[in-house]
Amino acid sequence: MAEEPRAEATEATDPPAEAEQRVGHRLELEFGSREEWDNPRLEWRRLFSELLGTFFLVLVAAGGGILVGQGQISLAAAVVAPGLMVMAIILFMGAVSGAHLNPAVSLAFALRGDFPWLRVPGYIIVQLVAATLACLFLDAVFGNIQHLGATLPGAGYENWQAFLMEVVLTLGLVSVILGTASAAQNVGAIAALGVGGYIALAGLWAAPVSGVSMNPARSLGPALVSRDFTSYWVYVAGPITGALIAVCCAYVLRGRGGDPISRAAGSGVLSPGWLREKQRLSGQIDRGEVAPPGIAEREQRKE
Image (cartoon, rainbow, N blue to C red; front, side, top):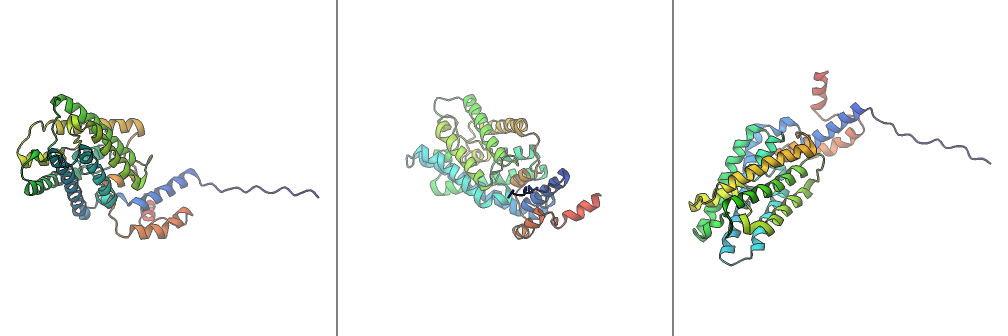
């Protein structure tokens, strides 16, 4: 007896516009709306997050420099420790402020359109204050020794060599940060491994040349508290130049920034109840049954 031909199952496909709209709904539910990112009432939390994170980063980086100079830990331990600290900071507070910890990173996110320019001065001021507080703490514990772990060109290297090294190293660091924060290559919490791993790797081979700052705030703290600004310009001009080049590279690789995932990574997400709302609505959005609260109303106003 001949078998009847089986009807092939066909999947309904959404029109491109509807599919794109649904993706937008999911992204806004996952990462919050642009209004939430720019909400000034939440700025104090973001600034405190940057203060705390930068304090711990400089504490470990400059403190390691002091202990290396005293012969109490190895150079490898001193350069790996900041990478591990950055990894931990990104994991525990990256969603609050974006975990910039670095004026060069804040500028890069702003230039990419992933961070509001209005918030850049506050972030940079807090980062510089945090670095200074960390070095005041180190001064109280150890005294003003070993330049308080300042970043300086290594023995036998000139300022211009350290400058070029800081440019290239910061180019790599900011490229990793912008890349792991982008919608094209968003890897979530694993981004912390990429950023922390890069910092450790850069320190392992380049620390004898420039000290591997890649961060004007990290270099300002020891210089200000020890009152020794020798070669400090290297650690301002180098990282800023490297960050600018990294932004240009990001444009070549991925085009313009400003996508929802990148904005969330650069600005942080402080939306009370967002996780509960995501769990409740994500299935309905997938089925096209509903849009998150507020989105449908805005779309109706646009029509």
